[in-house]
Image (cartoon, rainbow, N blue to C red; front, top):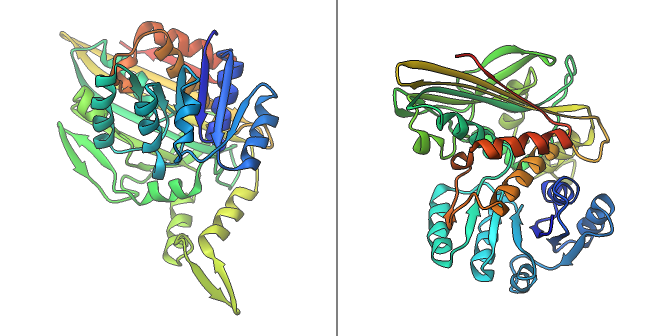
Amino acid sequence: MDLSAIVLGAGRIGVSIAYALSKYLKVKRVGIVSNKKEELEKAKRIVGKGLETFEIDVMSKKVIDVVKDYDVVVGALPGSIGTRSFEVCIQAHKNLVDVSDLDYVEYKKFGKLAKKKGISFIPEAGFSPGLSNLLVGYEYSNVDRVEEVCIKAGTLPKKGEKVFPVTWCFSDLVTSQRIKPTIVKNYKKINLNPFSGYTKEKLPELGEVESFYIENLSTLPMTINPRNMSYRVLRPLGFRFFFEYLDSYGFLEDKEAEIDGNKINLFKLVEKVLTFKEVDNYTVLFIDFKGRKGKRTYVSKWQAMSFSKKREKFNSMQKIVSASTSLFVKILVDGYTKPGINLTETLGREENIKTLKTIFKKSGIKIRRSALS
């Protein structure tokens, strides 16, 4: 593809995106930015010698001059500084595909500025939200009204293994479990306590898992106006109680404790222990959609599964995020966006679904849709 793209952030997700852009989209020039030399060296080993690296601080003015030399920018910064990708693209006058998790208020603010500049932003362009929103948006385009949507997603070990694969930022994982989830019931938003709706269920190939509500509906309730909607996260058996015990003993507080005269950061200790063991891992997505088209009931289901063996180049989450982000880059380049903010659920066109299937096939990710009526 005669295109140049640069990734802001060389963490787990940023490097996997750079790799996917190079391998699956065949982007002509791919660059990556980080202020950590070791991250850039690792990125070059993984992606290849053709990767262009820039050892600069994304908060500096230098990054603006760097991105001006590329056609598209991909933001893969931590949520705490995620707004920086938007600020840089506004100043550099560049289109952006971003995977950071920000509040909708931020998207609205940057969307107005982008519209004035005539540039396009696609926020939340990862796995979920991102891929999940795109698929729900596709189904939404086929109905007059949405009756019910249930999204389930998570990362899991092989059947029978009593471990939890930490495939993304550990601190973000902890934060997500503490936020009160929201569901939609009879068109009204209802706030619940963390771990509400806890249950056990059996999944094909993966066996029995835990399931509970989590805050991840994003902009979907506002966009598609569903009668009922929920988002459940899937975790290995025992996760909830393990998390609650760690939390109650202070192991999930990012502060030091003195033990036998030694100061130890308990949070970092737990993170090190949980991320040390590499295991085969799956990242899965299930969507149940029900709507009305005239007098007819419309029912469909989506299933997506990414798998990675332990010690593979990328884990299952990295694979499905980078493939999804590559899709959104292709959507932007193909001209399916407009100036301003483009929510991923508004991009669920038939042509984009076909592109999605092509990219996922190349990256070894399974995805299947079944329509029941």
